[in-house]
Length: 135
Image 1 (spheres, rainbow, N blue to C red):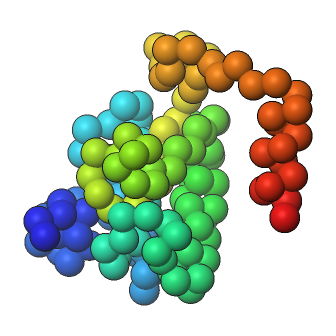
Image 2: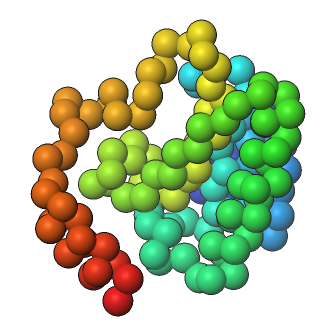
Image 3: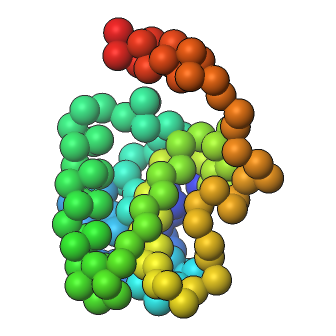
């Protein structure tokens, strides 16, 4: 498989590394949406978070937690987006977390602007979804 994130994790493609652990790597996005736009990836190839071990998940999100504090200090505000599979709009089929610093003056808009419309769900449907997720 020719995965650009695997090539970055293996050191085949140079990148601006912020921090690195045994299981994760955080680096500046090569095509940033804003200053400080950061990606955090697991070093091992996984297309979905569900396929990662507990140890890899803990490491990935501990790295996110550590780096998001640094991005916050640098910029003042952060939006985090997790890409989890092709069906979720993932361009690169490798789990990755985007930290995109946001400000009131940027042109990004709220996250719901990424969709054409919001979902019309009744209270009973919401309660049914909630019950299934709580089980």
